[in-house]
Figure 1 (cartoon, rainbow, N blue to C red):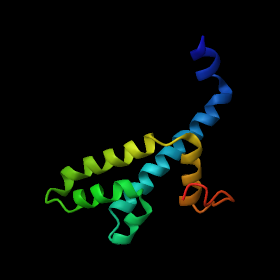
Figure 2 (figure 1 turned 120 degrees about the vertical axis):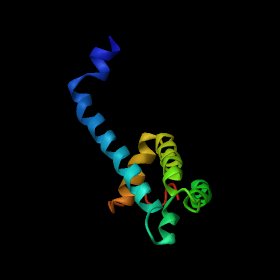
Figure 3 (figure 1 turned 60 degrees about the vertical axis):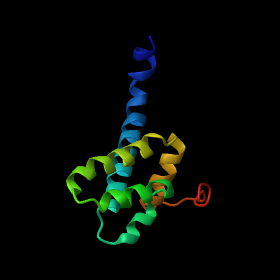
Figure 4 (figure 1 turned 60 degrees about the horizontal axis):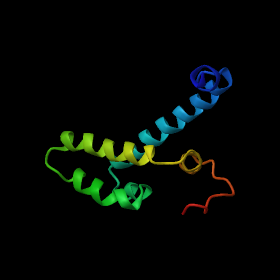
Length: 104
């Protein structure tokens, strides 16, 4: 019943589409920061992930470490609440609102 009346409800389709786009944007944006040639791009990543990502970037087998880096990024995004992900999406896409300092 929940599947029919809640999960697959037509009004939920637009909401779910928006959520998928936010998650996709966050993963791609964080990944672009990791593989950017400017080391300061990593400063946009969460503090608790930067050290491990820097270690992985410096490994000899860069291709093998990319899977681990993507796993760290995916884990971070997956752990976000909906409101936090939406706020970070706004911040990273330049759509900063009055809540800019809320989670700094």
